[in-house]
Amino acid sequence: MFRAGLKRTVMQLYVTNVKDVKEVKLKREGAKGVSVKYLLHKGVGAKRLELRLFTIEVGGYTPLERHEHEHEIFILRGKVLVRGGDTEAIVKAGDVIFVPSNETHQFRNIGEEKAEFLCTKQTFEE
Amino acid sequence: MFRAGLKRTVMQLYVTNVKDVKEVKLKREGAKGVSVKYLLHKGVGAKRLELRLFTIEVGGYTPLERHEHEHEIFILRGKVLVRGGDTEAIVKAGDVIFVPSNETHQFRNIGEEKAEFLCTKQTFEE
Image 1 (tube, rainbow over the protein chains, first blue to last red):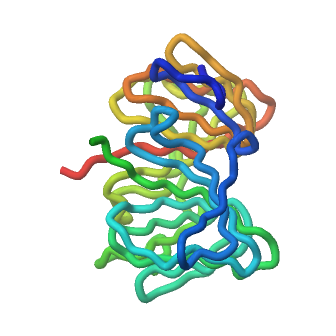
Image 2 (spheres, chains in turn brown, red):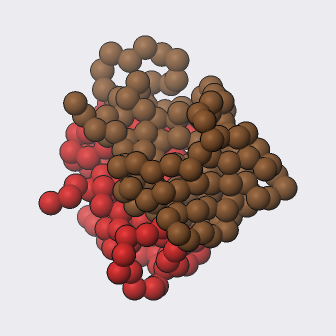
């Protein structure tokens, strides 16, 4: 078993905690007040999927985007307006969202506290 | 946008809540006190990934198993002994686990309350 920070030489069980993962600002155009923790990714052996924790400040939003990979999302905290294609929904803790391949989507914190959600991203082996 | 229970004809944004998803007992050999909610799956348009919520009763455990697909896990509640290959770790809320392809693994509730975790499973388009 490897805790974060240890060099990995063999593909084994990997364990970390959200508190131990560095948070980075999402600097992409069209983003405001969004930070990301890359919890699981290729660097720790996850070849097919990234698991990320997104935090959006009050009034912040992710870029409006569209891409081939799907998203599976689990809301941990806050009140988020999610836009998908021509429709939208207000989501809160315990809500689960699926964004299909090539669907335009955006997440906007419309609440009065930070919003947090888990979001998957498929990665494909080369 | 589709809420659970509506028939879907077009691949669109899908939203549900953990409270609205039916819980089923995991009846597999080697499992004790395990229930699963299939939050996202092919039935709602997720072609590449299942997102499941597992609940393990006090003293319960998942089957010891090994398979090709990876798992990405996020612990929501409880105290779980996770075994992976020859190693093991005790995990709690906020811990994140990666189980590599073909790694033997098992989850055991060693705490004094129900344990809950999210767990991904890759599915592949045919």
